[in-house]
Length: 233
Image (cartoon, rainbow, N blue to C red; front, top):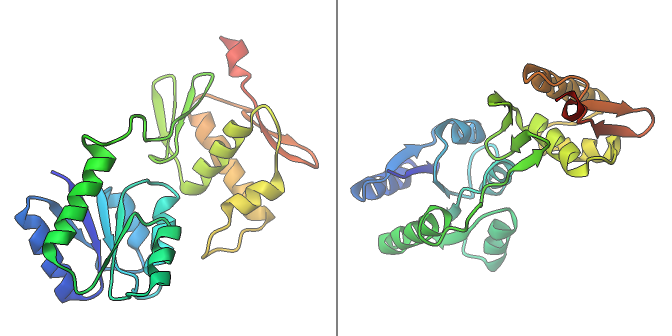
């Protein structure tokens, strides 16, 4: 049973959508804390998101960008905004489709089924999920997982971003400036200390897999991945 997350602050519309989806045997999760949308998404792990634009605290564009940092899950915007630029913004910020209010339920259901087929069903592309592999070390950034020798550790978004950047750059050096820019988000100011802390945490996760000295500091430049465990075998 596919799970669909509804991010809609109008309780009547949210309940209407939920009842409509449940009628077609979808599992539904309605977000109620609109400051914890990303946390709810990560906990629920839905197959599709219905997302309003006008929300408390942060708008739907913001939350779509946060979801896109870790997931390719289909996101359909449902909004009373009918302007062309709103629809452009929705797509530019990572949305897959746009439905205007008031909406026809048959159109909503048809679009949901279409996107689920494309993402997971008969039209889904093979190997849609990204996987990085480096001499036995496997990173699944969209699952926030790091695997080695049949062991798995869970990563934070920033740890996964650092490891992905270093693995893609290997054997070259990734500059501190590039990593700082990578860690920047819309909520938190990222400084040198923040980068140092996250590098330390990423090293700790590698240590949990039995890999030491894997992230090398290149003085005055940045960091470089080290695959010395390859020679240890």
